[in-house]
Amino acid sequence: MTAPPLADVAQAVAGVGVAMLGTGTASYRVERGMQRAGAAMGCEQVFTLITLQKVVVTVERGDQSWTEGASAAKLHVNADHLDRLERLVRHLPDGVSPEQVQRQVAAVLARPVPYPAWFVAVAVGVACAGFAGLSGGGPVEMAAAFVGAGIAQRARAWMLGAGLNPFLVVAITAVLAAGLYLAVVDALQAFGLAQARSEAGFVSAVLLLVPGFPLVTGMLDLLRTQVEAGLARLAYATTVLVMAALGLLTVTVLASPESTGLVQGVLDRSGWLVALALTFVSAWGFAVLFALPVRLTLAAGAVAVAGNAVRLSLLDNAAALTLASLAGAFTIGLAGALLAPRLHVSRIVLTIPAVIPMVPGSAAYSALVDLNRNALLPALSNGLEAGLVVLALALGLALARILTDREWAFPT
Image (cartoon, rainbow, N blue to C red; front, side, top):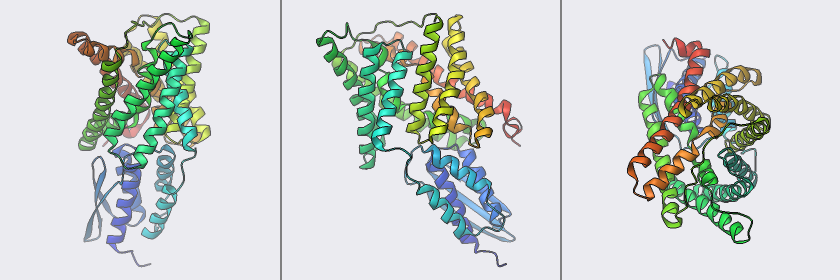
């Protein structure tokens, strides 16, 4: 059988790369997928260079080589597409043609999001309401977080669909979610249904903006020595966080909400059950946002419960928040390693939605309030705590991967 033109092979391999990159997966997975696709099409060597949105691939066959570049149209997270593309490249038969590869990739990318936009907005509202409860809020705070986050998510989807600058979208969404939260709480207070504003739901309402996939995949890329891609992802995630913080700070300056100094207390049995139930619904909501199928949204919720149970147990025993978060994320990584093969999915689609409910909302809020008061040292202290916890979450997942994956323990 005549070998296909090398230019066509390179184009198909690059297409696989940008398709995987555009779903939000880590660069080392993109590299591995491109190498598998190239090998299936008869390439002897496949060399890749991967950045945040672009791939460059050089394929070699005999004494011939061809270099091709491609760019992902946009950055987004679609865990369903991510998982299907991974399975596609894993099972490509030897001798497959470039046209067949391109057709199969296009078929995956053409799959619609499994949920309508209104349902995604409701799920995000439920997730943020659950996080408000985990942060110490009551029914009022949870209801306000649900309204603020749900409406903000629907507005965010519309703005992104209209092509607005994604970083500007982040800032506007943060202002909208936090502003609606305070408006709902103030309205309930005016009707005598709320005693006072609480910080518990203020940050919870913007939890939908946490760049969980770029943060974790950036850390994973660095540990796999994909330095350029890892740093680019972390820079992108940091920019998203800064824009979200600016939006929150804008609302803080205009509305001047007070800090109530929430402290995590020791949970009794009923408190544990409530906390774990809220953990489940929070992870479920973010799994819906990431377009996971129904069975996998439930699996992500179960993985989140396992990790947060460990985290809360350590906090009840006076462990530092950073250490407890690291242990919780590590547990999530181990649970994902056990569950993902049984469900025939990539573990990343289970672990990242599961770890988001552990984001330190109270510390981030306190940092914003302190900045508004020009209390720079407390703001720095709280901001550093929040940053270290986020880093601990990513590191916990990475450590679990190193322990359970031989390719990570011995990358050469």
